[in-house]
Image (cartoon, rainbow over all chains, first blue to last red; front, side, top):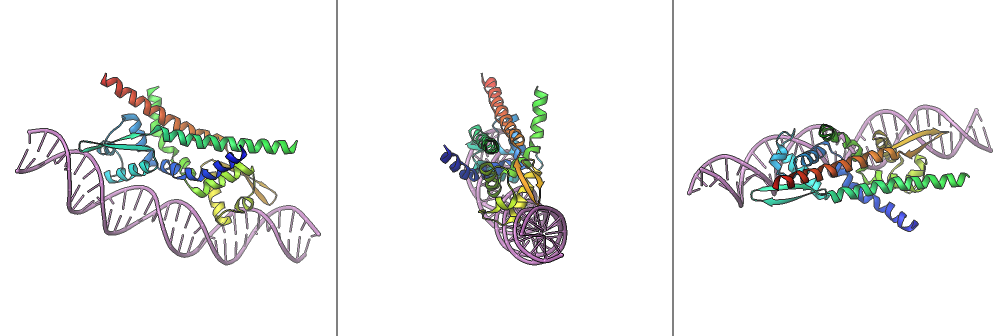
Length: 113
Length: 113
DNA sequence: GCCATGCGCAACCTCCTGGTTGCGTCTGTG
DNA sequence: CACAGACGCAACCAGGAGGTTGCGCATGGC
């Protein structure tokens, strides 16, 4: 158990690309548009955005590299959708951090008593 | 409800600094060390790290700016600790994205039928 | 067949970020 | 008081991230 916990702590750094992909305003706005409009193409995602189509393309690629979105060709369009499973993984990391921290505090309290 | 949801989607971009703070390997390793060792000083966090003390200081400041960690002076040391409440907020954003995406898919299915 | 649409690729630029080094400051201790 | 330990501040540097522009290439409709 403690071995599993230690190993997981070292693997935590592997989650950096996942969080980094979420750590950009433009990318979050793209995700928000996906969530309100459902699966859609790049041009539709770009319309009303503050950046160019190429910028949106780059951000979508970054999100895809992190496994947060996925795309499929459909005619001459490319339709993008969210992969919620990857978001669940991110939640898992956050849970792990919180629980490990709480356990560390518990160990400290046990030492004091 | 839908008004609240739409507003939240626009506010989602505000979570970018929070995720960005988590999107760095060095910072995640600092968090991991905090979680395994409990509240501790900068030098203790630096010992064994691959970067200098100043780099760790900068990362701690970045995490503090994002509200993920907090510090207090204690003698000539500065003790750092994790704020799990902020991590819970991050989880909340992830939950919101997932649920909104699922709802978007549901709306699409309803249109098809 | 022709044209508009939707993308992908590549070059280029700017600015922020992560990192280091050097030095000054405060605090506890013998 | 003198010294060492822990930290803060500032300057500096290299690399990468975000963004734009220009161009070329498929694909679908008229």
